[in-house]
Image (cartoon, rainbow, N blue to C red; front, side, top):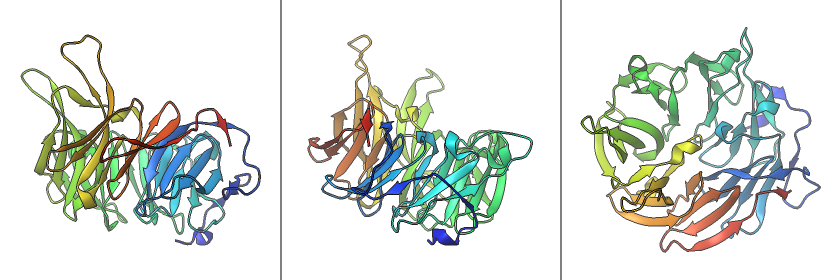
Length: 356
């Protein structure tokens, strides 16, 4: 993707620097989100900085000094080439950084009508060619839209009321959301990514919280909450959903005392490594024999229902490497990388209150 070709607004004052080159912003940071790119690169979003690490987790491959960042407004393309974010400093724009070629940052202007609402989320397609902005398009509170990142053109927009879990298919041809479909009843919608034409709008059995990947070209991997109609007890599930009609084609039900807690961050802390059939998520686990005992855990589950690893780690966001060997997790502004096979700590990356 050539960011120089973007017909967009240039951002003055945004600093970009490679690791070890020049002085970076003297402002404290804290890790707020982690992601893995398809090549295994670990990307850390931290306050006023974005860092990328190679397999050794020692030397930063790239360091970007950016305006104040909010975790809900971050996205990384699956191939690791592009980062998108919006923040209070971006003024109704979504900023794009090219991590692969050091291109100058550019921004897509969202426009303003009579409203002044800011975007509530950004989602890049796997190659970074498309960008979905949740709310704030045109300054309107409930208008969401799809943009072509090579031109900055708004391809389509629509009412984003109640929409959550935006997700692109691996080939970028389809775009999925939940919560805004079936007349706002929480259904699954599948749309053409470039036209917004709705191909599927169906109810789903449970409340989908997020999509973590695709098991194959026709199957979405989701984390969902189900409610027993008799007891109102909630259960956490990893569901496989058909892209054709939203039907459930597979399911992993977590133990009754284990509840998904990844919704404390946005997008929710649920990420999968489809090639090896694993998913990582943040959960709380209660002990019925103890009062007020709710351990915080990062768990890795196989799609066959096997609990592969459970790590005692309080916090928020988690990320699973594409080969399923490592899981990165945030706690109190710092990042820890664990080995999935035995749960051992591989690397601690301090960020809280660091000045970079």
